[in-house]
Each structure stands twice: as structure tokens, then as C-alpha cells.
Length: 322
Ligand code: SF4
Image (cartoon, rainbow, N blue to C red; front, side, top):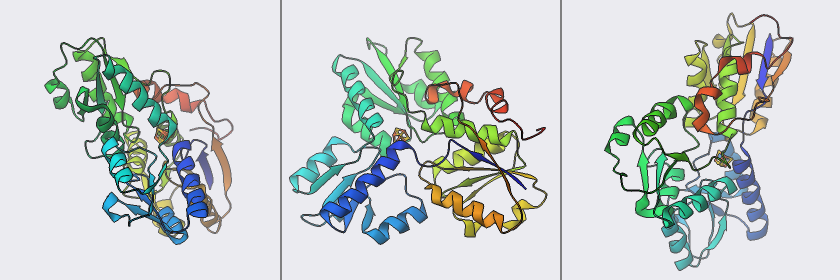
């Protein structure tokens, strides 16, 4: 069987950095440490980190007096920071620098009377953190109907930002509605967009154009993994999420000559390699890599270009007709 592995897969730099911070905190502060509202937490990684003394929590109240709390890669609202300081907890901030830049750029915009529209899920930690940092001049929208309800007519400047875990297919209709209602709206992240999500989604689309089945390694409950699976299916290719090599259903492989493998944003590459080793036990493998796109695209706001089929189609040589 041929296996095409997406080069753009797995841990983003922000989450990679957060894990390193957790490991450093364990060494320097001792076990346990408490990681607040980390959205990226697939089962196996939670188990591995848990064994080392990391506790993933949803509320500061779960941190005992004098404990060490790590703020997640997606950031926290300022009231959480205030509460942690008021309780004299040992605070370690693992907020991704790209997320911090969004907060800083958003603060500059809203301080001067501008308004920020956050395309995201109201209960997602990343969106909550951004809204919490920017106050009443930040507005969450998740649907086209939300866009229709926005009242920003008197604002001198309007910008938008997109929650990074969303699928381009979900974002694009909302963003299009936003641009139609507010033609002067700008992209807050025009100069510092996170490309990790788009590249992974683009790779899933590319893989789906060249294989018989796409496997997404990661947490079956992760919205990011589901997005990758759904993007592949939207291209008409069967796709499944597999959270470990043990969860591989051999029935999926029936009639599959070429298999595509990618991984969610929070999936450590060990899990991908374990899956490949498991596949090797089924028979000889011919391993190929789908490189990252050469064209540097923007963030999720570049959805149509990110989904442009030829971008991936000319990306891999020698795999044969597909
Ligand atoms: S998805 Fe992008 S912005 Fe979010 S944590 Fe990862 S690198 Fe940072």
C-alpha cells in the first residue's frame, strides 16, 4: 500500500511551545501543575502529561492554595488573571505569541474607537479570551444571522479576527456576510496570521484528491480533527479520525491502495509514527510526503485560495496518476 503523509500535520508551534512550558514548569515547580482550559487536549496526550503530573482543569477553583497554574496556548480573559493573582497562585503564561499579538492589535483598535468582530464559538477558550480582553467593543459572531444583528454603523474602523480552530468551510460564509455588510472591514491579523490551521486543512484537501482514504490521527472529539475529516469528505473521499494505532479499523483499509495520513493540531507525531508502524505489520508500505504548500497564504480569511484544488495537486511528484 502507498501511504501519503501530510508534511503539514500535528502540533502547531503554539501548542508545541505550551507543552515545553508545561514540562519546564514540572521540572522547576514540581508536580502537580494545573493547566487551565487548554482546548487542545487529545486523550493520549492528556494521559502522557497526566502521568508526568499535569492536571487539565476548567476552573481556577480546582487549583489548591499555593499551586501552579499554566494559562493555555489560547490565552485567558483578564478576570481569570486577576483572580489567580488575588489568590497568589504561581502563574505561568503559555499563551501563544500569535494569540498575544491578536490581543495587542485588538486593544490598539478598540482603544481608538474601533470595533472588532470575532468569528468564533462563544464558549471556546480562544474566543472567550479575546472577547474578555477587549470588552464591549469586541463582538462574537458564529453565524450569518449573528452578522445581520451586528450594530457597528458609527464605528470609525472595523476589523475581524477568526478563531483558529474553525474549518475554513465554516468560516467562509460568515466572513463573506461580514464583508458584504461592512465593505471597509479589515483583517486584524493581516500581518501576523496563524497559518498552522489553514495549512493543515489545505493538506487534508490535497490528500483527499490523491488517495482512497484519509486518516486523521487525533482526538475523535476535537473540532479541529473533525474539520480535517470533513474537509476530506467534502472532496468526496472517505475519511476517519483515529485516536491511536489501536483504534484502527482494518475494515476501513479494504480496497485502499493509497492511504493519506494527517494529524490534528494537538496530536504528537509519536502517534502518527505508531500508526505507520501498525500499518507496516499489515504489509509492505511505500511512504510519500505531501509537502507544505510553497505559496505562502494568509490565515483563515484566505479560505478560497486555501481550498484551491490545484495547489495540492501539483504538490507531490511521482505518486502516479490520481
Ligand atoms: S493554532 Fe496558531 S494561534 Fe493557535 S496556538 Fe497554534 S500557532 Fe498559536
